[in-house]
Length: 337
Ligand code: NAD
Image (cartoon, rainbow, N blue to C red; front, top):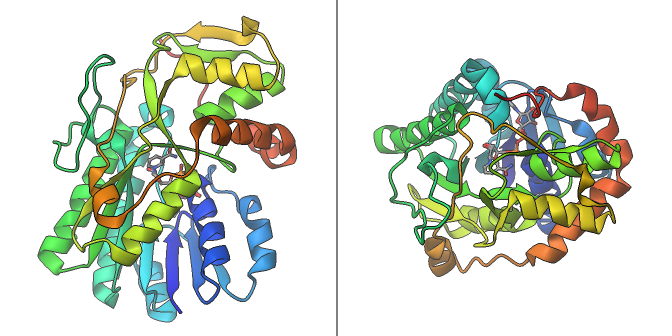
């Protein structure tokens, strides 16, 4: 019977994680702590509120609020803190970098401090493959957990800095931490600024898909539930102080993502237009995941083609979820350069 304190649980991965955890751990409770930025959306958890009312609690608050997080840690005595909370959109970081350092670095540091002050027994931090920098399109290289941190954008740099803070709190204050660095996630409840929902929703609204000119840049696509299962294994059997890469090994370029969405929705290529790249647009990342596969026996279960189609159709069928979010979009992806 464990209590999880999940930060950023009203976002894409956090809300999927809470649903996954409560449905597979019938004796556990989850406290969701989220400041509800433009990307936070409690509508993503209405079914969870109904199905697990006795085991699910929501508190609105900022991870940077040391006094409030310390008080809530004292009150709920979590067995695990899982930190998803972040500013997560690379494009927005180009126009408002300061916010990313404030939330992702100083916010994480404050949360770590509250965890040390109140004796949290386990702190798991969610990070990204993007801390390692990018790879050439045509190389055989992969990033392992010991690859150097070479971030190229304010978002990536803020996540890299947060990882270093997490490690420092382990080394200096003995906080029992783990970190996971995962590749691009896809699945339901992703904010419409991100690539797959963005392209899908644009064409469902009869608008053009704005592909960055370097449309052969690739991403490694991981279904969000495969990510949740990796976090579950790390919480259970991961070694304290360690970092685990989490990726599917399936790389698909942006042009193919766009073409596949059009083909699933039975639309033609005239929806595609090309716009200048966002500054610092990374070419490619690929993770070496032999550590989590070998140590913890993790394997991604979703086949990309199937999971991708299901995801695109989820956005087609759940207009009432995303329609109210369109007024919250922060960046015009067609206006770089
Ligand atoms: P998201 O933007 O959908 O959700 C972020 C959530 O954090 C929102 O609910 C927001 O309200 C909340 N939040 C933001 N600032 C906060 C603050 N100061 N205090 C409390 N809550 C705050 O992001 P996501 O895609 O779900 O990503 C979750 C985590 O996973 C992030 O740390 C991100 O860096 C990491 N990650 C995401 C991906 C991906 O493909 N989405 C890949 C690798 C790593």
